[in-house]
Image (cartoon, rainbow, N blue to C red; front, side, top):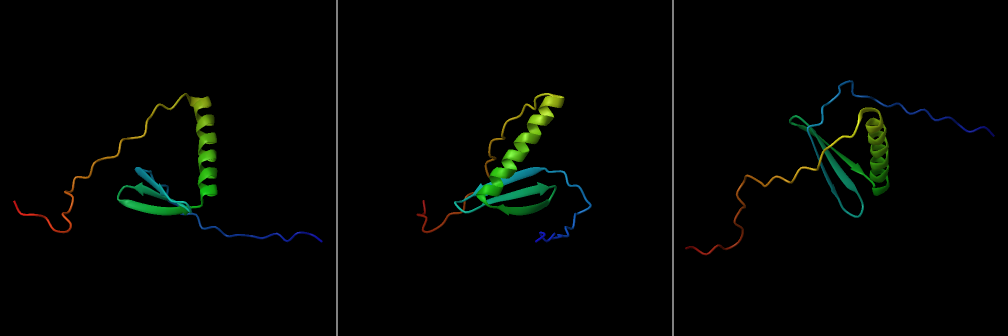
Amino acid sequence: MPEETQTITVNVDPNIYAITNVSISSNEEQFIIAIFSGNQVRQFLATPKHAKRIHLLLKQQIEEYEKNFGEIITNLPSPKETQFPKPEVGFVPKK
């Protein structure tokens, strides 16, 4: 019995966006990846297995890039401290 071929239609956004920032958080069940482009942000949710596959694929691509063009020298930026004052919550004694 021949296998059925399944066709999936994918809509590709014709625009290419420059990534200006990435924020990643996780818990036991998921990784939440926020990708910023200018003042726009898109959030993506990935299972731990999908996040690991993204990591492996990106690692493979970077290794190939560095083989062809040389080492990419960079570090993770340090988290910026908030510029907003922390709100006072609860009872605050007057001075």
